[in-house]
Length: 271
Image (tube, rainbow, N blue to C red; front, top):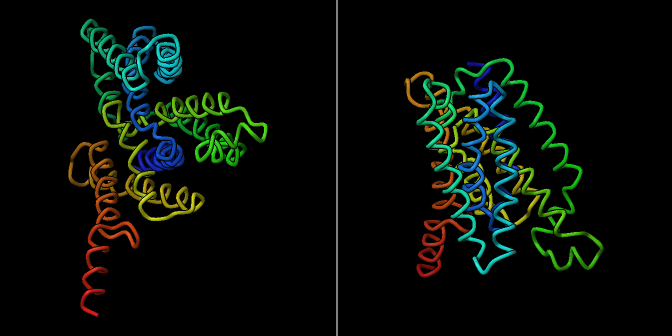
């Protein structure tokens, strides 16, 4: 249980930090694409007896590069390129799974198995999380300026192409980290929901990072406890907890909440 909580919270915090930049740059669909595109790498790693993270990283980064190549060398727009690459990669992964005799471990990758995480997997998650958080802290200002105004970032000497590549590489690593918690199918939720929730609660980016990380870590703890005591799927429980947090922010956010604004207008008319 303690191991599951450790992996869930670490994965939640890392995903939440990247989620803020994904929300601001409008790359939420790209997170979905990367999460599905790593499946062939996971299956091949299983067949070759290699760590799942290695194959996932190779195919995650490769799929991002392939999306860029298709978009820049043809008339196909970026959203279509994303859809083509991630569905093709996911289809290859499903075909490979159908040819693998034992599918037990692969099903854990698809839907998560944080309650059965091994020591080596914990070390992998902690190492990749430390690397990701370290880079985010080191390049925090540059990445934030790029997310808000890439033209201004270029004007002051930064290189938007490199920052874009850095963000995409961090996204690939983050997806691999979250695989242990919620699996490939639901990992996109951890990359999208925390940032979207925090976006409704504050206008300041620094606070957005803190709120997203707090909400995601809290949802990981709540979901893991609920799955352990109620004997339900851990990944699904974590995502449901995150979705509940978003619903509360959507309804009751001080400035953006739907019900909050209606109550404020009603109070104004009554005054």
